[in-house]
Image 1: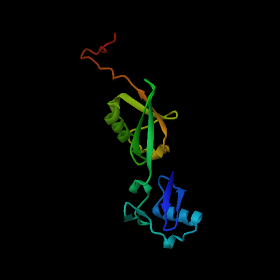
Image 2 (image 1 turned 60 degrees about the vertical axis):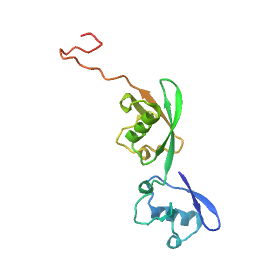
Image 3 (image 1 turned 120 degrees about the horizontal axis):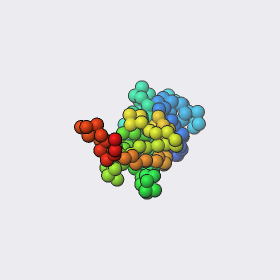
Image 4 (image 1 turned 120 degrees about the vertical axis):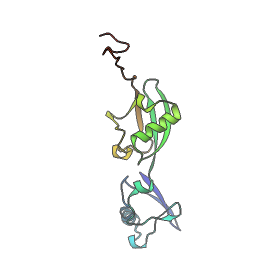
Length: 153
């Protein structure tokens, strides 16, 4: 994902990965823009980022705007999410926005079903990615006699 950097004299953008460390970002700036790593200070929201502090996930530097298509109705809506969010968190946001309970739908990226405990970045779900929500029916309930409710035995 491209991130915009500002110096006193100019602005430039560099593509960084979801799990790049602060030091790796500085190395990319040196490689593409020529600023020595030792002379760089990177700030986010007024706070200096330390080389040892972790990766872009920790700072939530990369945010993705996820477009979700509900395949039953062909209705589209947009949900904001961080690349570091889990699929379960995205499903919660969809519920907050659209009122669809997380247990009633599955999310797909391409042909892969997204697992609730996995981060969006691990599926390489990036900026303006399109996911598909497939509505699933309520689970079949078993009656005390062992017969399926709504069905025949």
